[in-house]
Image (tube, rainbow, N blue to C red):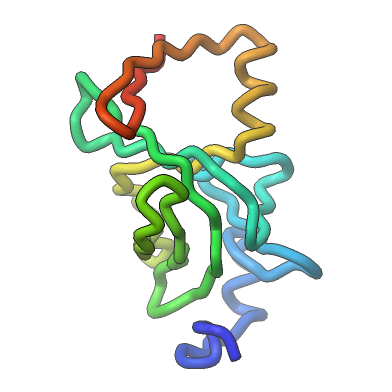
Amino acid sequence: MTLQDFSPYHSTIVGLEGIYHPTEDGYFINSSCILSEFSIIKPNQVFLLQNLEDSNNSELEIVRLLEVFYHEGDVCLYLMDLVSQNTKIIKHCLSNGYIDNNWKLIEISFCLELIKNGYEFTLKPNQEILDFDFQ
């Protein structure tokens, strides 16, 4: 049983919008806040989760994607922080067409491709978490 079983939705309507639909082994999520190859994320993948609440300093967590489910216009991502082992759910609102997220989820291999293609990151140690700024 998955978390999606508790919140059924009409997959055809959501999938036709070209925004979210389950794939064979993952989920297609067409969003600028999720950076992954072909916009597909899969359970058990490791990601960098960037908190964008503070424009001067962005927290960076290493997380594992446990599950994805759709609930009342939101795509919900169930994540586990690999350092603290804490779990959390982050939401991405799809229903109003306006993206108001204070986070970015970056697939590790996609992040390495960005770096190879000249995208610069500045990493700063901050206790057990790293902070970084885009340049």
